[in-house]
Length: 79
Image 1: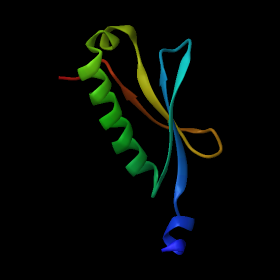
Image 2: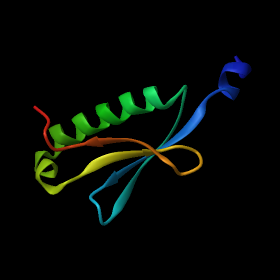
Image 3: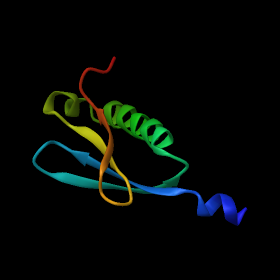
């Protein structure tokens, strides 16, 4: 449905440690809530693959189309 596609928003996902940023891609999603869920999934997957990142202050940072931060999923403090 083209109307549904038109209502999607583009979100940018980055892995950030406070000093540098690694681009983790873009996704077209319904809203910031859905983007936060994707970021949480990414953070969990990264921690399973590289548990050492939890001790280094990393987070998945989500920005909207205008570049404003809409969510931050910290890798530290996860079970």
